[in-house]
Amino acid sequence: MARLSPLQRKLKLKNPSASAKQKRSQAHVDVEVVTLPVGKHINLDLDSLSHNGRGVGRWQGKTIFVEGGLQGETVKAEVLSDHKTHAEARLLEIQQVSEYRVEPFCPVYETCGGCQLQHLESAAQVSFKQLAIGEQLRRLADIEPQQWVPPIIGENLGYRRRAQLATRYFADSKTLLLGFRQSGHKHIVPISQCPVLEPALSNLLGPLHDILVAMEHTQWVTHVELLQVNSGVCISLKMSATPTPEDHQLLASFGAQYALSIVCQQTDHDDLWLSGSAQELSYSVSVTGIDKPIELDFSVQDFVQVNAKVNQGMVAQALEWLQPQAGDQVLDLFSGVGNFALPIASMADQHVTVLALEGDYAMVKQGRKNARRNGLALVDFEHADLFDASARKLWQRKSFNKALLDPPRAGAKGIAQLLKGQSLERVVYVSCNPASMARDLKEFQTLGLTVAKVGCIDMFPHTPHLEVMALLVPK
Image (spheres, rainbow, N blue to C red):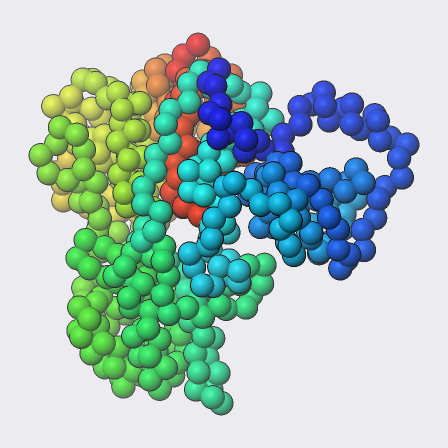
């Protein structure tokens, strides 16, 4: 079992053992349930952090979650909601400050719902996330990894290459709100810059706001998505109607002025490119031992990781753990446009064959194009609903000795059963939800596999969002 660092020991998660829970339940079986009126001010000591980064304390035996509080702090908080087993509160005053508390760098930190952990020192954020992953694995699947590897980290600022902003237009005053949603509300927090966006995206927020206000039908724009790609910046406008010729020309001129690609998206309509080319959306992944990077094209509807540097580290670690060798047959599930499949298949001198399966047919077609673009003949992209047992038909007559899966937040429930009969030597599981991953890893263990390595991936600094990679090998 891996030892905890001093920092991790200090940043303990709220994780009572099953026996502790049972004893506490028995001790309080006859105790009257404490009620807390909404709006009540209480003083309490915070002794741990919850899995979503809130400070945790107890008031007359009831668990209190305090947004913005940190372990080791004594605080005054206001009750926001009361439940049978716990209450939720907001921070009013810090009477004793944690040694890991720092001053948030963003001027709209207190209202914007984007970066909830800016008040926690960066190294402590990563330690907290690794502890959160370990807690989920123990509590939900009784799993203790044989080895914890160092976390994959990148830049703390300027790291997001993709972000969606909301809009609201007030016709009477001809004003536009352009920004992120307020934490816990639908209200929009207007922003003119964002420290976590890549600088090229952040610098466009002011000019973009002005050009949208200048449109004849600003109210038709419902959302704005910013993307940093190999060729520059792309702006995707979600619109309720096709822009008029005047607005089309206005946006096209704006795109030409700033060398942007601009696309209009409408439900049940083909994308309308107002500036630039639909062929310009791509990103690169470098692979050790390969002379040139893998180029991956994608559309504005396709999923790509928002943190380019951390994605590069994630792909490199997945290849290291998978250990592709001559003659390997690799199954890549939830393959997207080829983020993992193409780097694996690029090891052509090893003659590694890859079957990549994806439920979104548009991304399947894009994956095939990416394979052709990079001259990779040993990878095959196929369309499959991986939550349907019929998907097994795509590989039931084939033998795979290695597998990689990168499912959505819901996880890959049932996938292990579909892989019965395959002689799997290594399985790499990449997840954005440790809870669903823990459930799935427990199922994979029924195939005679055990969790050999686990590592935290800090894809979203300053947020409690967790990314994790696990390696399974035969027991």
